[in-house]
Structure formats: structure tokens, C-alpha cells
Amino acid sequence: MSSSSNAGIAKKARTKAEADFATWLMMAKLGGFDDLPSSAQSFLTNYQTRLETMSEAESTALAVREVYSVYYSEMGGVGAAPEPKARTPTTEGKLVRSQRP
Image 1 (spheres, rainbow, N blue to C red):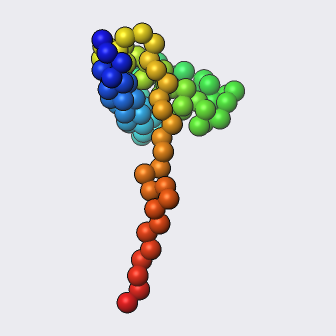
Image 2 (image 1 turned 135 degrees about the vertical axis):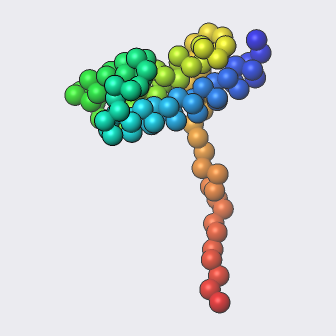
Image 3 (image 1 turned 90 degrees about the horizontal axis):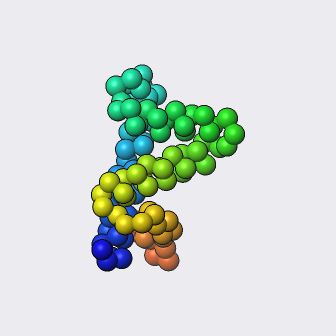
């Protein structure tokens, strides 16, 4: 499998992992934890346990990374899931000024 194919899989897996984890977290907060699949419950339980020793941001990042790794493999990615590239702001260096009449 080519590296560009793995890169495409990685991007899709990362996007899905971020969306799914946010959805699971919201469902759990709204009382729907028991309605989630067992794998989602496991990720959330690990997330919650880690909150005792790390910040919410750190625990969230780690949980998303775990979900991403599973999705990457399930989608056919070869080897370990690559670290995602740092996101760059799309408006960097572009100021938009509003004009007043």
C-alpha cells in the first residue's frame, strides 16, 4: 500500500475519531452511556480514569489518539497509525478587514 493511501486513511480515521469521541462524550454527559457500544464505553472509561492524573485536554488528546489508532487499522492502514500533522490556520497572514460605510 502506498504512503499516500495510508495518508488518506490516516486523515479519514483521525477525522472520524475526533467526531466519534466528541459524540460519545456528549452522549455520556446526557445520560446515554449505557446506550453506547462497548468499545465506546471502554474508551470513555479510560478517559475518565485518566482525568485523575492529567488534564482534560491531555486525556481527550490521548483518547482520540487511541480511537484513531483503532480506526486506522480497521480502515486498512498499514503499520502504526502515523502522528497527525500539526494543523495550520487557514487564515494565517490574511487579515480580513470590514469596511464601514
